[in-house]
Image 1 (tube, rainbow, N blue to C red):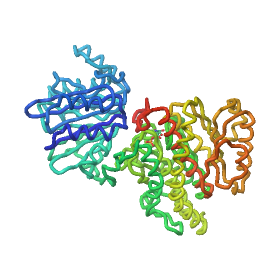
Image 2 (image 1 turned 90 degrees about the horizontal axis):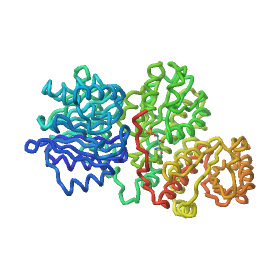
Image 3 (image 1 turned 90 degrees about the vertical axis):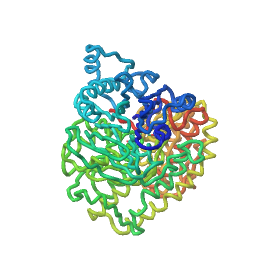
Image 4 (image 1 turned 45 degrees about the horizontal axis):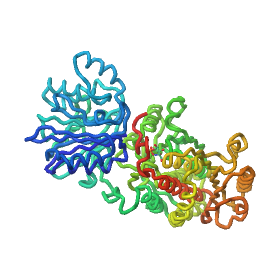
Length: 614
Ligand code: AGP
């Protein structure tokens, strides 16, 4: 999950590298480092444990050379604690070679033992330093960085994006990738590399995506790509559809606050151009699917993306008439599922790089299933390896805790469900028009929920010292309960658990004691099913045992008032839309409680934005 930047061109590479790292820091922030190569000064490097600010202060105080060739790295530690020695770049060949790495080299131990036996000494505990030393050996043999990279990558197993520079090769950066992201920024007389487009979007919107098992040799005037076996490749080009300012805080106190404020616009962007007022879904990307053969849909995702899929799945099954299940990616792949051409495996991933989900997509592809990616990051690996892709167009999500992506992902699933229903001719014109009306009304209703922020902040203020919060939801409220609990865990480091409300009496009610805070997502009282009355009964059961209940309920729902300590109201909407309104105050609550506790809202401890290791 590390951030990687490479540059070759006329600028001072330090400026490009540090600016790029600042935009990638959300990918990992245990340590950071840079290496610069110039004709006059050879290779100079600096790396420091801690956040990017530590390195930036260091290089401000002790400027490095101003060479036009450089690589930079911000780390999420896997092998070895976050220390200066374990930070990247790793040097070799007497300090003339520098390497940065994202991923895990799974056979590093045997390679390390082999190198130690040959007399090499290691300065770090990392798997990455093994690659640096192997590259130094290969470069000394071949005198060419690209050939050296070709030799070395054939010995490595696992996941890796590697960038390397050498003092004897100013003006050249060589990169390689297997199971880990790397995109190329195409400039005018300069070129860039990054673990995602945020690394260089301030300098160019033109990009190429490097494929699996490929090596790129970058100079300021050329971009040469080959496979690990040396065959020439011409990577697909794409244009980044957002600008650098979108990846800035823009005056907000945190990226998360900015991204919650963007939730209405994110949903509007997901829908834009894809849904007529009559309810006709138009998504050309889906024409790559053989819809006629689909007799089962399986969603695969992790974390918040999985909860978005769970939420969307209710509507999809109802509208399409196709059985739909949702599985955690890391469970799906290892249970040896029976899938085939009739199965549509839909991955949901904001980053498009989550290794658990990527490996599950590969499993599905190998098993002959059709695969569809719902993704927010253009040029990411999962879309490139799927039969078709629907981008959510939510704009960059920088805060590690996902917010606007959740709503965009669920709405994208709604659109897919309606699309399948229309193709199978099981959705009537009036139902489609009604769904379209509900979906087009969402942004404004979500905005209304964003405006509950001050009230939620007040609530969070009097809960700052709480040690446990429970979330109850039923049917489409259940994924919202899970999402609310995850936000509190990852932002405020508080034990939080989401339950299906019907499960309460089967054990979890034992957790209820006087003062226990419980959020309850209440179904609409207008819903003809009996779910509303059942959930109100759940509220009575926990209140009778001393719980402090915060109900999220539809405006005008009088049944809840006598039993809740606090009620956060949502505007009346259709049953499938109300969860997308109820989740907004839970996103805000997680953020405000973290703020009340003085925690880092955008970069919570131990986490990274994109988990690119299994
Ligand atoms: C969400 O707040 C978490 N940061 C995490 O659960 C995330 O949703 C999960 O890792 C999946 O990421 P993806 O959407 O990029 O695949």
